[in-house]
Amino acid sequence: MQNIRLYLDQFVQLSEEEWHVFSSKLEKVEFPKRSIIRLKGEVESHLLFINSGIIRYYIEKNDTQYTFGFAFAREFASAYDSFLTQKPSRYYVEALTDTVAWKISFENLQLAYQETQNGNAIGRALAEELYLYKFSKEMSLKHQSAEERYLSLIENKPHFLKEIPLQYIASYIGVTPQTLSKIRRRIS
Image (cartoon, rainbow, N blue to C red; front, side, top):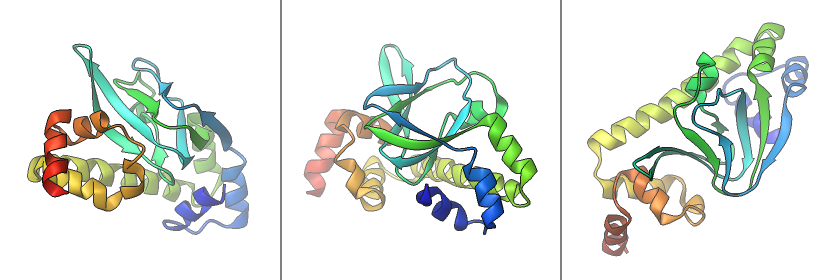
């Protein structure tokens, strides 16, 4: 639980009392490798903080899975748009590896916002982080080549790449597995 405290402390200094209120609403969960955390069509009821593992976001179209995001250790994860709106998710959330996380329900997060002086600051920080991730991904798709996106992934998350199958990395950067193989050969 210390990882989540350190993460939140980057954005707002919680008093011990506020941390107790927030942490009392957290529940430890474990997901086996390749398990579906949230199905398309389900309402997201929890926000996760990943202690260890990798989570993948994907859609299915014409019997093909398209990976559009990952979440790694020490990051928040969920079908966040569904979580905020309490409407069905339009995509799948999967534990790509064995994953251990802390979860907080939508209702308990709302209570934490109300019961702590810095609760809204926590919510704002989470929303801002997720927005920046999404914006960064959109900008990379518009302004970087597939090779540049792959190199960025290597630079920013090198230790995780060993655990992600190449087909998912290829889908994430917007190329076929064959094109990714060519990129990898070219840069090695």
